[in-house]
Each structure stands twice: as C-alpha cells, then as structure tokens.
Image (tube, rainbow, N blue to C red; front, side, top):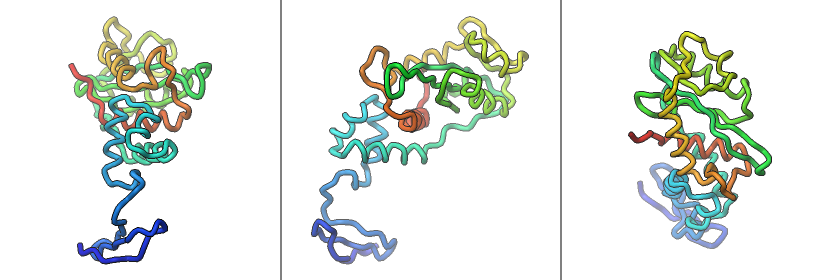
Length: 215
C-alpha cells in the first residue's frame, strides 16, 4: 500500500501510515525488538541452544522483552497432530526450576514413524503430570505405547498396549540426549536452569514444534 506521513513518535521520529492496511511504522527504529524479523531470530537461537541472556545480547534487546516474546511466540506454535493407530514412546526428563533444589520433570510423547514429539507436560513425577500426556495419546487409540519401567505407568496405560521391553524406548532416549545437547537449560552439570516454569514450557513448545529426531 501507499505510505503517508503520520506525525512523529515520542522520540521525534517520523511516523508513516499505510493506506492499505492502516498500520503505522517509524522511519528508523532504534529499539531492535520492533524489527519484523526478530521473532525468527529468537526461534532460531532458542532451537540452537542459546541461553536467554545470550539471545538478548546478540539481538540487542532487553531480557524482559525477550521473555515476553518467547511466551507470545510459543502461543502460536502448534505441535504435530496425535495420529490414530500409531506407536508411541513416552519418557520423562529431569530438570530444575528456580534452583537446583527444585526438581521438575518434562514428560513427553514421541511418535515412532515420524519421530516427532506430539505432546508434553511439565510438573512433578506423579500420576497427575504423567496422565495428561498418557490420556492424550490414549484418545488416539494407539497400537502400542512403550515406556520405561516407572511403576506409575502401569495404572495409567492398559496392559494390552503397554510395553516395557528392552530397547523399546530407544528413539525417545535418543531424543533426551538431543534435548540436553540443544537446550542449555537442560544440559547436565550446567549453571543454567529455568527461572520460571512458564518460560520453560514456552521454550519447549517452540523447540518441540520444530523437532524431528534424525536417524
């Protein structure tokens, strides 16, 4: 559309308005968070394992603004559909929130054929946390669900489709390693950990939305 002058910003910069969509822009932005492609860089850096403060330094935006952007971006990310009659692997990954004294588990499901993560939940290692993922998978009438030998699964998954055989969770165990390698907050023996469960969930939503386990 055609741009026309539309007054000045608080910092005395010329504003323009598009006659086609009525959106306004500034002639030269000094704050990098306003640039249209900043969200793409945030997603790229998150999935490459760069920490929050490092991303803020690289993109020259405040950490507070970055955290708000990450949460906003995560709300637009949709995980792959849970397909019916498929085989799934479910596992838990331990991490920390706020301090190394506060353990938290990431429970997630991987579909064997596509090697994509289709659902996850964050919380304590209890039936309540596990059941959210398990129940979502069960609604798809799965052929088989492979897990480790954690006893909680026995009361959550019907015995006829529940398998705990050796090597049954090979794919998701490999995904665990990939996650710990790619996401700094999940690295073992790291000084980095999530300060907020909300941000942890947002980062995982963004990462899982792009995740495909390589053979």
